[in-house]
Length: 248
Image 1 (cartoon, rainbow, N blue to C red):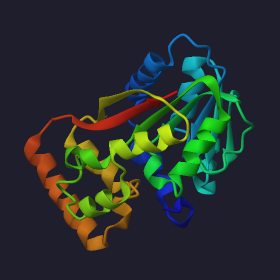
Image 2: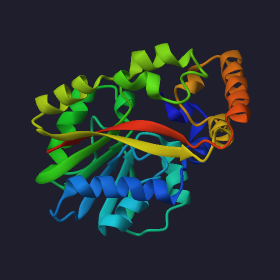
Image 3: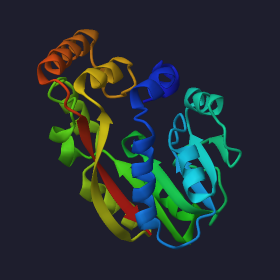
């Protein structure tokens, strides 16, 4: 999806900001796999509005380069930038605007299904990553569709997800063909809303690229089903599974 042809960038943080505990969870997960190797430079590839960029800079005391093809997303990132260790650059995963062997950690969050040429992107990651570094990928995968919380309310999203999401095996195959070794895979369950009322408000913000592809009538029907469920279920936290892939 070309985010610059949509209004998603303006709504993105309203729909995807899950608070400081969420960010700390992911910084701890990345640290687990980063180990003791010094991390001086991080590439936040597909950084979007920069929701992880400053947390990465602060957690690792590192320089962070956020790269994204969307001008609108980068504009949003720059408006809230506070940390001088972070800078944002336009660019695509297939042509990363960085020199060879220049970063210690590549962080990728929910971008793999947006990449037009994932094979070339994996090769570019290999090019810019130092031999001692790791590539850390958060991803939605085809194998997990039934576990994603909005699918039951928006059934028309399922064929879209089946079309665009890779399998876990495909992600590994692509990175390994580019010269990486799979260090580990993991499944992290993250809380994304305190209850389904709050979750419905996040969905209504219009920040999800899959739901943006639904017809207005299908989206409205899904919202009504979600809001009705939110009233019935009461104060139940909303969680979702995120698959992690770590490559060296």
